[in-house]
Image (cartoon, rainbow, N blue to C red; front, top):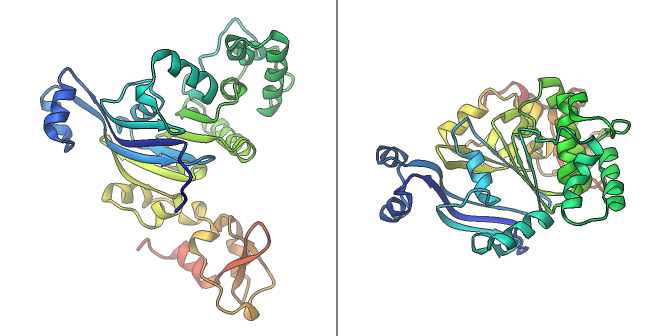
Length: 343
């Protein structure tokens, strides 16, 4: 257990919409029944949500429409005020900040990307990206130079003088991401940033996003309704239903050990070999003298190395980024993961 303070911390956060929300929550003593509240004219958006996000971690919050995932993100960034609970950003009490302090925090620490691109149509790609820097008072020359760096980072070289109408949906979303990154936020809030894109462009954007995160190491709260997207991107996933976090865990643990029936339904159709890493199913090293010459990375997705592992007669050593053996994977284990049932 690390003692390092989390970048984002939410403690027993509630968001209830309705005229009597605060009184009803107080009377309920924290035990909120969404149906009873609804009958009284209140809508439960977030129900007793607690979680931490560590520095450099990507926590993906997912659920179906109406599950409360976007409301939770809006509470965590204080775009919406929570009805009750505590929210800390780098140890700072977010709910105690006055408007001016909140604006400064957003300008200097937070980046936000939403489903709608919200680009300024009369400004070029470069001008759109430089705009938030100029709002901060940065000189035009410096803001344009920084914006050009972001253009290259998101792969839009040669299109910096295009207007939004001249770009594809995926390119527009890249501009939105570049604009958000230009202010060098420590914390990034993303609400369904790829959901408006067609499947092929969406996959490309997911790959691009993973590439960016591998080098930038931002602290990210990412909302999606797409379980495949969550599995692909997340360090950890929080699955929500009716405002409640049903399970918060690593993608591997959620697929292998769903905590509730609702989570199990999400995971039952997932081909586990497509999402699980070797690390999730490897065994401890038993006999280093009797291992295959073929080695596999602990971070490899099972599907990408399954065929080679099955070609081996001996157990395959699993190595970390320093080439140290950290476990073994038996061909029979791969067969069980790929062809066995989910029990």
